[in-house]
Image (cartoon, rainbow, N blue to C red; front, top):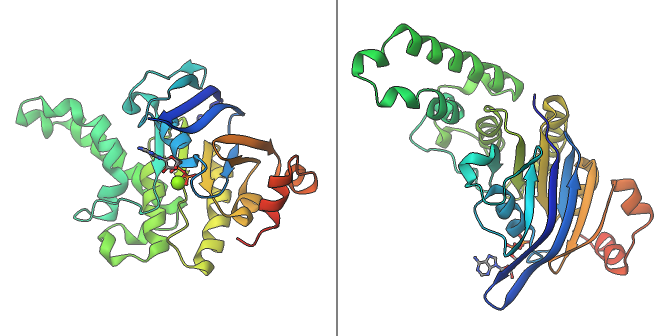
Length: 258
Ligand code: ADP
Ligand code: MG
């Protein structure tokens, strides 16, 4: 699996008069799981959306895998994102949901071809490869028995796994998750925390995980980035941050009930 370095330099973001991010610098080593931790409204989602290319920064640059992607549209960035509400296609099976990104990229060239080509041996071979890939990904996430179901027939945790499967099947350079566990109940949240961290280690995709939950960040991350009011207060391993909070507001934030 590919793993890429991510470099954020001097990122600022203003919405009119509102300065949401102020000169954010952040370096992420290839293959690491980084948690962006901070209270609601501190700019975490905005930073993630800038990385994903959904939102242009007012200033600064983003590079992924050594390429400056600041002006690249989202599609060209080779990133995958999982949202809080999972955003699965409701009318499609689990299998088709997971396969969708591959089908779109690998079979799209056939759309412009005459119909007979669509049933050609090469198209069938691609479909077979996609199917194998989906089964492999689904097994990894332990949802290979659910491939024929529709999203409405799944539990919250199963939906979450489908969303992750769909995100990682293309082997993105960067995997972004914005508060992916916040709609799950407490027990499942604890379980998924461990599963996502273990999966991330197995795949080795550079991953940024946004949360306002300190326990989540401290138990999952290789690197915790503590944000407040549009700036980074501290960045380090969970142990470094816990044992030596660099800033009174980090200590207060870590000490507060989540
Ligand atoms: P977080 O994810 O940490 O809760 P956000 O990045 O969503 O924070 O938001 C940070 C601040 O930016 C908030 O004050 C929010 O209201 C504001 N904001 C976010 N997106 C927009 C937008 N498109 N237009 C105006 N203000 C926005
Ligand atoms: Mg947010």
